[in-house]
Length: 447
Ligand SMILES: Cc1cc2nc3c(=O)[nH]c(=O)nc-3n(C[C@H](O)[C@H](O)[C@H](O)COP(=O)(O)OP(=O)(O)OC[C@H]3O[C@@H](n4cnc5c(N)ncnc54)[C@H](O)[C@@H]3O)c2cc1C
Image (cartoon, rainbow, N blue to C red; front, side):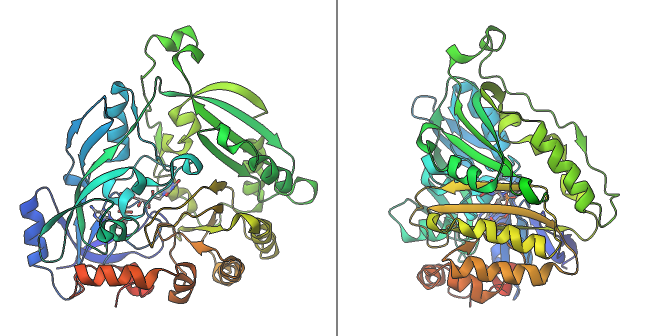
């Protein structure tokens, strides 16, 4: 009986499903054999914002119990891991060998299966591409219960990378990690007074940094409109560390300081609190070059707080993320102006420049500007997002399925012109449509 309520990180549209824990190949085969008419979808740690890992009235496979790291080869950087291993666990296991996961998103609480399913990206995309670029092979169990070992030579490999769990269940993957000398970054931070200057600065010297991101103030108006922080970093070498850190250069320790309680009223993030947050965030990071920061400080400051999404109150929030071609950076300003015009507030605004994309038809990254804004759910939000969709799609852009929770099948068709190519490969792997999710039905990804 479907009886477990599941939702995404945005906490917007929970639905009930029959959740089946998968701890072995036998569990998986049994679950697929027992699939009912509402089908099956795999779920990792539920860090997608919308509904791709939900399946109302059907089966959801909880993959987090399939969580062994099978091998780590310090010389080649090759690791063999189960799909339910989190990036946090893998990173902690690999660092003592001097190995680094080249693609880390804004949280480490993401599974290998979820990272492949969404073909996730990090702040290093302009240098290393997205997650699928670092998968040497993967084991996929298709709807008929058969296991396939796939490599980048297979179309089904690329349909699975970014395929949002709709080609089958990833059970294991071989990844190739990079070598590092330390677990620290040397960080250059610039405080920049306006959005145009911020984007201009972000456009130069990108190749000199392994990781780049900027945050900007989307609340203040007038002279402060779009002021922000450009943060760029390289992996620190042993010589760059102060003597105290040099003694244990690969040490990583990131305690979670607090779990946010589920007590916040709607409307807590408003113009006043948003302005206050933006002022504090801007001021906390003055221009400084060569600062040594640890992984949490530079990459994952929010991981210090457990369940911080509860801070948006009971109606949840939406993360609007899109990419537009580099020559259409004007859309970033256009989006901010539309948000102001609608009186919508976002305090967490992240802007990155993507490098080349990969072969996966549904992979999100392509060369361009990608912007994320977090907006609490409220009555006017739908109208704003419809306007933003037009701006993004007219500029040749698209939305990120891992963050998406409210757009239309048409917007996805326009944004992903290779959707039919992907469907052909998917349909051949799953001819009776066993793999299905709330998202695949809502966006008509599958027939
Ligand atoms: C705070 C925060 C910051 C984030 N920052 C970034 C970022 O910087 N870059 C980025 O790219 N993403 C980012 N994300 C999104 C996140 O990386 C993706 O949504 C990722 O897919 C979540 O992984 P998960 O294990 O939670 O998977 P889920 O959310 O549970 O599932 C995601 C998709 O993967 C599929 N899937 C999961 N496991 C398997 C499996 N074993 N086999 C087949 N399919 C599977 C599911 O069916 C679903 O379609 C962020 C999310 C949060 C909450």
